[in-house]
Image (cartoon, rainbow, N blue to C red):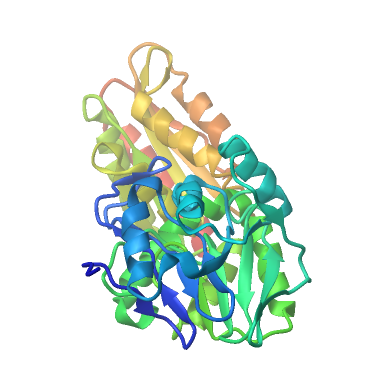
Amino acid sequence: MSTPFEAVKVSENVYWVGVIDWELADFHGYSTPRGSTYNAYLILGEKVTLIDTVKHKYFGEMMARIQSVIDPKEIHTIISNHSEMDHTGALQMTINAVQPERVFASKKGVDAINEIFNGAVNVEAVTEGEPLDLGGGKNLHFIEAPLVHWPDSMFTYLDSDKILFSNDGFGMHLASAERFDDEVDPWILRHEAKTYFANILWPMAAKVGATMKKLDEFAHPIELIAPDHGPIWRSKMDDIMAWYREWVDGVTAKKVLVFYDTMWQSTAKMATAVAEGVKQSGAQVKVYPIAKSDRSEIATELLNAAAVIVGSPNLNGGVFPAVADIMTYLEGLKPKKQALLGGSFGSYGWSPVIGKKLSAWLEGIGAEVIEKPVQTKHVPADEALEECRILGKTIGEKVMG
């Protein structure tokens, strides 16, 4: 039967049989303006194997791609590297359709899949270090990768083709007709990889680092890294590994992030003065008015910022709601890192408490608050704007060293 969906050959024995989600606009609260892919991989051989599946609604498209290569009923084994439903949404349907001999996941993956599907899926646990023989000289090796991105996450390695199937590791949300890293604009490649790490993996940075150490000690050569989102790494593997080490280690640029919201433009005027001070120090400044910025953009900039300065008007004795949203989101990413500097500013009508609240939040994410908050009643006069400039300049100079 003809189909508009074709598999893409990845290596001698492996095909990409995933789907492209051009419409995805939001994932876990972070903006995905370039969409995403849900990558699944078909290994041909004596025991045909499917690595991961896709979202429930894309089951038919995945099956059509498989059918462009083989009869799906030839699939003998299914490997689930991660139980989240963008990878397992079509798992039960796939099992029902192809009737595989065996389905495997990590030990914690077995528990999660049983919970998600209420015990309707028969899945076995693999053991790290014990290869799975696919016949014909092909073996799968499993690397537990807990919390890259969920506790059950693991990587699977195919020794015959030297491919690491890394699930959420080294991935990105990028819908593209191109399947390989060297076919994608380099700036987009780094930007989307950084955005993905900042908004998905940053809370688990230490665990990501531990898994990367495992890969450094892995006894088999890796020639391709095939994640479950975004392009396959075949030419720039050294780049993505280097980027991940930077992000895991918390390497910062000489950059100050300023984000704020405003009610009657008072805080906006203060933000402009703060940014001017940072610029005068020689440090790079990134300014994000929340009214036109997405929380995920701000998180991505914070990933390698050396300092953050936040501004808010006072509303009902507290932080402005849009600022509180960003603060809550960033706090959940656990951005604590050495040498993060912080400062704040804000305006109020009759209750000057905003500075205290912003400073407490900064300290909560591990920032060193080196200057007292700048607060102004109603509209900032020249004196208050000068204080804002000095705030930005002082923090910028600290960043510059």
